[in-house]
Length: 572
Image 1 (cartoon, rainbow, N blue to C red):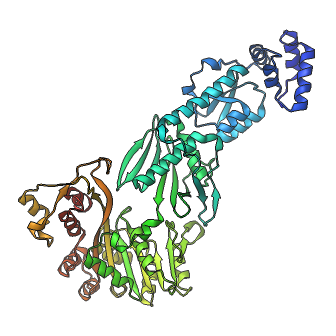
Image 2: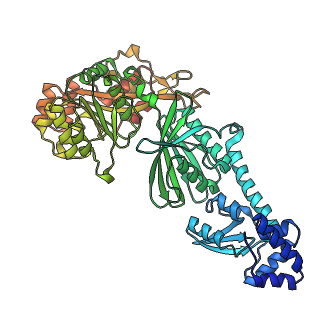
């Protein structure tokens, strides 16, 4: 209970603002009920709010601020936690550098000032406001924010507050995060709507991005980022706080990046995981969510887009008792799905399968998955060493980043284990030269690597609106469409149009473009001889292995993707 100093009580009585008996009665009533004395004096009309504010101002030499004329759009919404605003009746007014001006009914409320200073890390400058006007201003402060969020939600946000959400620890535990911030219902609904919209549209990533005077949310759909909404910029902090609560991060830490996970249960049998990362930027925290759909790892190899010859090579390598399968490509090219598809094919009760991943993206039942963490000394190399002492049949290394990991992986492949891994290179031949440049002996590469798969993801043409493309013969020849093994009269080249089913983009979903190279005796000899990637690429073509460009053009010739898309993903 906030009280009044003796000198302030005497001033109120001497000024005729309240008589001594009434003040004594009010103090006694508050002692019994635990109510705030200043609130009680105003609510029971024992004293006028204006007279009380004037007396406090005179006593403590603190100015009175007329909050009824304050422009609430100037208040820094994302600085002070809503709970503190309500608890202490403290309205943030302005921020000037590291100073925060706050309107209080009782500036002697040191607990309010301490709490706000601790939460914001700012120096708090208190001014006095008339209690009745302050109550109205705080109510309008919250109402304006809810209206901003409701406008962003539209009519679809009515029933989005009760999704079953769990924050997931990296060690696999979970906490209910759905009820967190119950008093932030509009923000909860807004974030839930964004998550559900992303799932419905098949997005792979969601970007929450704060700028100086604006805020935007973008989604990566079919490989391209698209802006979906621009909520009010003053919601930046609240959106960040909500996402951090959902993913079990430290909401008070805004200076360093953080990682977390969210599990969104859509039904009893279906759940979607989100990998969450925060990044401190100039105007707030940018937060990116990677959508991890477990069903994507269970598509089956036929759904990935391999040609029959490529599929046969991949399947044959998977069923070998030992050797190394390398999958290569840039970030976002579908390497993880290819790896998990292979692991699902191999996942039987008779096999011991272990994976080292950074991070573990999708949980696979029956497979021992290890989250690599360099900060505690658990590197890919350390995990791999441990796997080899655990009687493995199949080992998956998320990425070969250094010579140590490469040497252990190759040793495993040479001693009766099947090893799957990835590298960040542009083509299969370049993968071989990358390993050599790392310091791996050419003999070890030639004797351990079974196949290399380079891949990209291309936007698939919408089947509902695609139209035949009229391409002159000279362009067909120039682009190489007449050299992919498909007769000219059988070419079916289409272009994107756009319709309601594809959202006007002309594309719907993605398909894989692959270069699958088996290490034949000829290619093994070239590795041993130290041939460069261009020479190995020429040999791969002579052996009948299509490169990425040819594979993309073949898909364009059969109407799966457009020629423009084939050029986008494979043409230098």
